Length: 459
Image 1 (cartoon, rainbow, N blue to C red):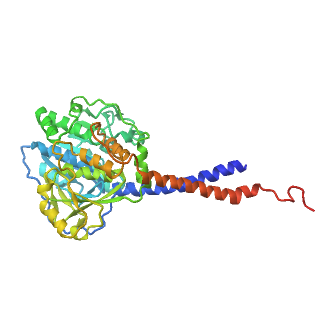
Image 2: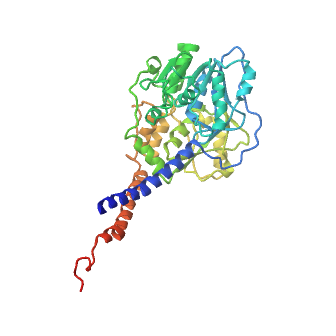
Image 3: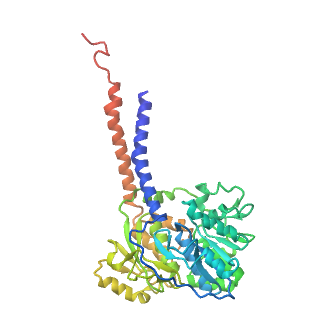
């Protein structure tokens, strides 16, 4: 009986110390990425910059949701379609209020759903559906209804955006693919009538194209461009991006990823890395949309770094392809930072004035041009390699896996694993063992000792 009691005590203590504290850290960190709360007042904003509408061009609508949308899933397809010059490309949302991308990047939609419908007088020619968490049904409902309203148009889901698409009922009886984690986490189980695949980078079935995780969306976008514009245009865009895997556009077959031991570093970083870095990202007019996304989907997504947008502007920052960004901090009230990123291959020239203003304000953090010298590299290469140096090799390798970026050419140098994340977990395990041992000695073992009267030795 006492042995069973000991097992229960040790088990409960371990669950409380290790599991409870770890779960709290994981949930808090995960919410900080997916539901980042703005700590500063929203500035009074003027009208957004909207790309000129050309009636002769097909229109691509890239969706934004309430309260948040995955940053890569939105930013990179938006940029790629805009790069072609063949489309009208707009950021659209249920309303015109400021929207947030995962990790804490705020931006203003070009049009509300109703405004775009009135402008076009018909469905958009293509709707891009990023991953959009459905945490508030009332706020999310207009997203579902707008997709259903335009069910007959060309639909392209990126990563777990396929789950959003399945939620509309439009994937019933169709082949589709989604983020590799959605399979193992059971997110697709609610949609058994969809023929889910996990051995390809993208799937086309009728008017719907769905992609696997994150960078697989690049293959899907290039495929759509090759079909709707031309093969040469798709190849040109891939070359401009220095994207190394154009062969997936022609043959998307791959060996699938699974949730396995590599996931451990992600869980531990989320749960037990308590001294997270604070990194700023300097927003400047004309900045590269995709390069900006790499800061959030590399550092912030790793569970190791909080990313804060900073600028000296009181109005939206307009990117290279007319996205309207709203910084969370002014240079004068920026939080204490460990690093300041200035993303983009051309950042040193385009952001020269902004960097000068930052330096003049006596900020001690020296701006880092993370993509400097990477004009011939894919936008995620330098950030992933830098993440290994900032954190550890396991974190960087998992970052590439999360992105489904099958890059064996990257060079990861740094600590082999996170000493903090694994060290804290070990200390919590030891604390749990010590607490259980003391409980055992104080209560359980004591009950097992028999006094002299119990042994028949009394007078």
